[in-house]
Image (cartoon, rainbow, N blue to C red; front, side, top):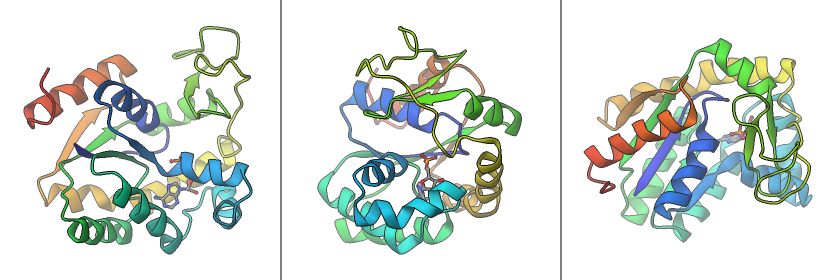
Length: 217
Ligand code: AMP
């Protein structure tokens, strides 16, 4: 199964990728998580990405493409979360897949309105260790502000503040949205209403995977 999860920040890509990884035992490749972990370890890559991430800008393609190329060479099946994010990356992904003799099966577009995105991101908390996402109201942790998996204190992402959220949405509209047509033209795009709760969204994804013969319910 080779899936791309696409959608604006706050559309639930990370949440759904995590559920899919657990259920289908397919590796989730989350670019945001990889970059945050590199940054926490103060690696070259993390430090190069830092200022872009803090401003809500895209990290340059050559840096990101190299990370993805390595991850794809190591994983025959995958769920890509947060890549591609512009047309150059989408085209580069085609090249990598050709080189590896692979094919993207489906692009799942999590469609959600701007108001919901802003509400979700401002209430989002994450685990600093495993990256699991929570929402203070819709998806709270079982125990007071502690990660269900790691039992450590949740934090708010630095880029989940109103100014950076605004910038991330501008970047999404300008740079990421054109990808929708790219994959529509390849008949790979499946649009899902992602304003609903995570269980309903997951069921919709599962239905599409079943229809595409990628998962037998
Ligand atoms: P995310 O966790 O997916 O919201 O990503 C957090 C930040 O990481 C983004 O705002 C970008 O700065 C950076 N990032 C993640 N994925 C990409 C990508 N495909 N291309 C460029 N920058 C990215």
